[in-house]
Length: 280
Image (cartoon, rainbow, N blue to C red; front, side, top):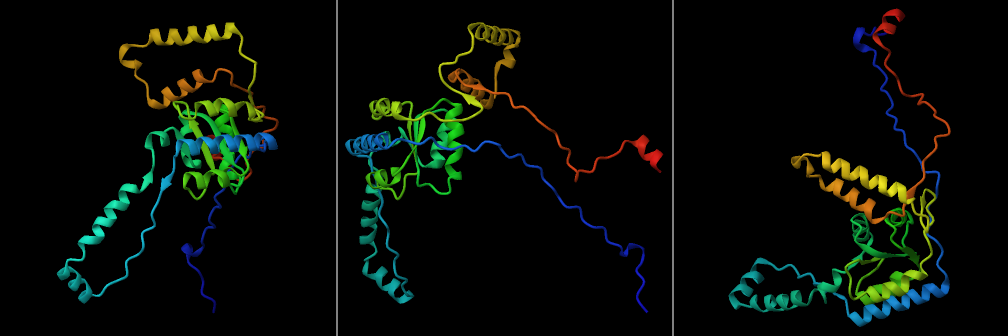
């Protein structure tokens, strides 16, 4: 006889968790750099790096062979452990960047360039074309375009600059605004950069009318006057947003238009209490 299940034997099917995601209809791509401009930029940056003499010196430490207890005791008795300590201290002195002041004027690597762009500290950005997948450098287009910072993708950037700097690869490079050693090179290079094409951000000679600027300034001054002395303090996030708006006045954002709204069929909406009672 088949065993009859009790009241609690029926198992409820688990609800499948669904997440809604919005995909951008735009495919952001780097603008194509001309061949003559590419060679000019690479030669100019490489020459400056050689003149400055910035390089990272690294020593690969050899793994010491494992010693037995008897050999360790013999070395301790002989006093031979003092000699390698001197060599290690000499190696650590020469390890690192040759000039830290010049290194502070650069942002090297994708992560460092991203952080500097978020803080609006860069004068220009160079990205290597050999970076794969392309997804790791596509976010730099939005960051540089929203802050009106010139940026371009340069082929063979890592191939030319990595051996000069003593690195394995240079996928992204940025010059900071406070730079002195690279200011002249930046002035020569920037006119050769192609403009970034972001559909919802307009750059160029178009500026907001003077009347709108005066109204915005009046509104900001009115808000500040109504605040109490204790309320004047603001969080660092608010300070960043205010500074970014003041530094890039030419950036205008286009309004997004919603063509059609489709409800989620998997979402279960709770009925109000009155409707529940009627349905019962």
